[in-house]
Length: 318
Image (tube, rainbow, N blue to C red; front, side, top):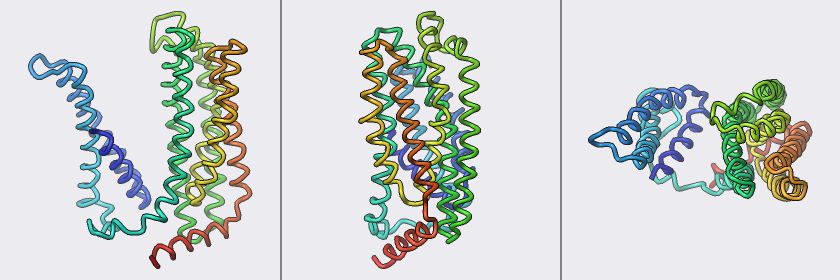
């Protein structure tokens, strides 16, 4: 029930971000977070209307539909309406160019997320403590990923704007700036993880076995932070160029032809267990980041601008 609402919000968020309106989605989320907390408490714990654990799911579903509704009202009455001509049958035209851009992006994102989810499945073979540690590591990884994810979105938007405006040199400069910023934040993430590797587990559990498992894996997690950030940022740059298909060609084999065999070999054959699982993913991220950065630096920016113009002409002709 909640997934369509969340999908609409993400699509709407990109719609306003492409207009340079980055604060709208953030403001809506900040407004709805406390509302969601109150709804969750009432629906779960209230003595009269509380419905237990199911109430949490209901609260999330309501929030996920309030997000796109709030964004729609923002666009309709405050800002962003300049690029919206209302609902019409034209919304069912020109799906071909959109799908040619969207499908490789879906492959790129799903390839990475599914690879990380498989780690949790494999971790279950090493016992409950290992599985609990993997849950902690997955949460930390997801939390840290928000930094490169945000930089990747910013790089995609900036590069896309410059390419659409016909300024290839500006797009090139934005790409270099994004990669530099990404490197700095990747190093910062790695240093923080290294400093707290023996303590962070206490934020999640008091089980010493789980905490030790987490402490053993965190150095690996820290080592690939720069690669993780650069992979995300370079992927954002390629999306801004309209060449996300390149990322899909790189990421799918990197995760499933390299990462998974290495993870399984080190985890089960070398008996590194959870540490081994993360070694394979770390290697894949290094490969993805390295190859995508090479592609970005070899970009013929004038050609990318011409290709973008050609896509626009094709849509107008259709």
